[in-house]
Length: 346
Image 1 (tube, one colour):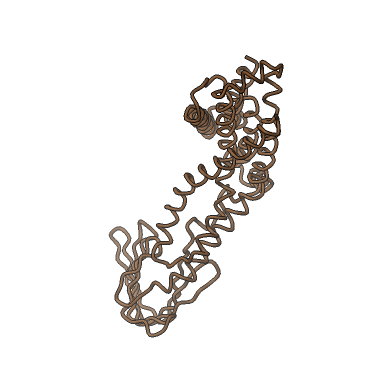
Image 2 (image 1 turned 120 degrees about the horizontal axis):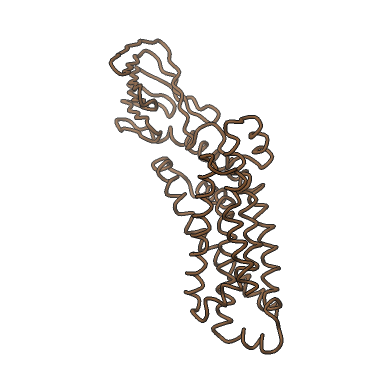
């Protein structure tokens, strides 16, 4: 009986992960498509980007998919009166819930691996891949007589392109600094790819700079104009740091100590939800009654909506200094854990 239930739980888990991953991945792909549009990204590049996104998404979707799979499986058993038959034949509620223990431990280990190792590595690889695509392919999009906006806050127009890496009649608008705008005009130039960046070696031109009421005109013989095509800033984000690096950074940068600790605790608390679902899932499936698969889906998504609301609320309280960072990070987890224990015993 346990093997049969576990088999159904596993199939439901895989389908739920596919559904949730596809839903959450769309937002990230749309954001990246704004950056990569017009660059000529290949199918292989898109496949790699999707692969590198998976660990970040799986941290969220594994606990959600586990709860949905338990609610769908046990809800189906309840609707088909299998729960009544099992309990009537002498199997306790704890015995019926045993397959969820196996599933919960497996999901906890998998989610912990994603949170501690694969997610930081995937974030670093994703940043590098996007930078590589923009660095190697963006020059190909520079065409004669067409405004190029492949780089954020940069507009490039060239009169002629004698060779793939040579330009003439160059006009560049640089608005990366909001308080200081630059217009660069050069007779000719050359595209110079650099590590994780792109540069233009310009010659014989002028730089016009406007800053408030000040206007500056600089003429040059040679000018090295560098672009950073990365989606994010060059500094590593918290999501790209390993747990050990987060702890080291909390000591190195005391002013950002709370931010690093909140990220570290989230890496622990998200996988640990799988252990709470061992108690929560079977109990909610009985409470939902014979509402079927739609009822289980609604209950599962509602639980996680409330949990994430509490999580963000607790973290914001910790960031503002109203409560200790330890309490803010684990408040939602403690509330969900206590609720799960109470309804499981009931």
